[in-house]
Image (tube, rainbow, N blue to C red; front, side, top):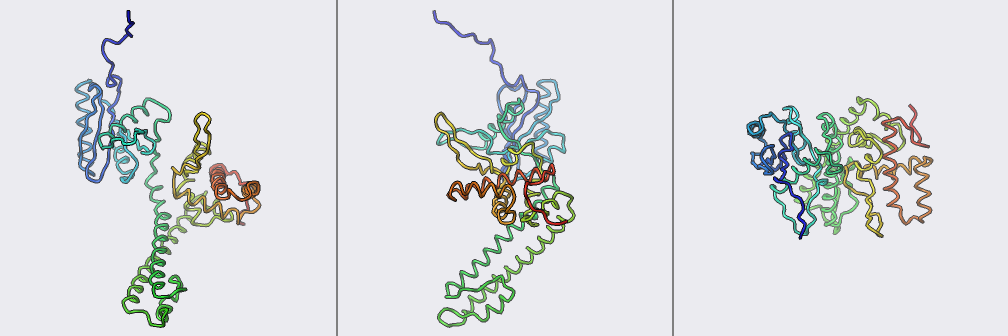
Length: 384
C-alpha cells in the first residue's frame, strides 16, 4: 500500500505569523503602486495606486490599511515600508521616518529576480518581489538584499559641489570640441578656446583657402564662446565654494590634503563620496567603490571576472585616477613599490589590471588613515 505523507489539517498562511503591515512602494513619475500584506488577510497581497508625489494620499492609504488590520486582529500594528533607491532620492524615506513609520531603501540590483530569458516585468510583479524581499529581510535571512544607508540631508547636500563641478567640466569639454570641430571643417587648426585671448585669435583666423571666417560661422562660434565663458565662471564659483567648505570642514579633509598627490578636488570627492561614511571592514570599503573582485567558481571552473563595478562610480573613477598620480608623486611608498614589483614580474602586460588593484589597496589605506590615523607606509606628507 502506498504511503501518504503527513499533511497538516489546514494550510498555514504567512498572514498568521505577521506582526506588522508590510508595504512596498513601486515609484514612477505618474503613479505610486502600494503593495501590502496584512495579518488576517491570508496570503493575498493588496494593491492600490496613489498619484505620484501625493504624500497625504499615501499616508491616508496607510491609515486605512492599519484600520482594516486592527478590525481583523484587534491590534494596532506597526507599518514597515520598502522602496527602491532611484530617481526619487530619499525624501519619501525621510517623510515616512518623520511619521514614525519604519522605512527601508533597498539597492534594486541586490533583489533576486527570475533568470528566465524572457521574464515578465510589470509594476505589480516588481511590487510583490520587493514585498517578499522585505519579509525575508525582516525574518533575518542573510544576504537576501542590500539596504541602502540613507545619507543625512547635510551629507547629501555636501556632495552637490563635486558632482556639479564634474558636470560643468564635461560641458566645458563639449563647448571646446564643438568650436574646434566647426573651425576644423574650414581648414583651421591650433585654435584654443580656453586661452584668454580667444576673442582676438578668432578675429585673426582665416580659412584653409585664405578667406575670412564666414559671417554666420563666426557668429555661431561667438555664441559658443559666450556659453563657454559662462561655464568657466561657474566652474570658478563652484571651486571657490569647494575650497571654502574644505577650509571650514574639520578633519579628516586636511589630513587628505597633507598627502603628496592629493589636491582639493580629490580630497573633496574622496571625503564626500566615500570616506565620510562608516564601514566595518576593508571589504565593505572596496565593495562600496565597486573595486571588489568578482569570482566565477563552479566545479572545476575557477576564474576571476574583474571588479564588480557595482558601487559608487564617482569614487571608483577618482581612485583609479589617484592611483596613477600616486605612482608619480609617492615613488617610495610601499604601495608604489608593490605596483612596480608586480608590474616587473608580469613584464608590463597587466599594467591596467594592476593599477585597479592598487586603487583598491590605496582606498583601503586612505580609509584606515582617515578613520584610525594609520599612516600609509612610506607616504610623503606636506609640511604643516
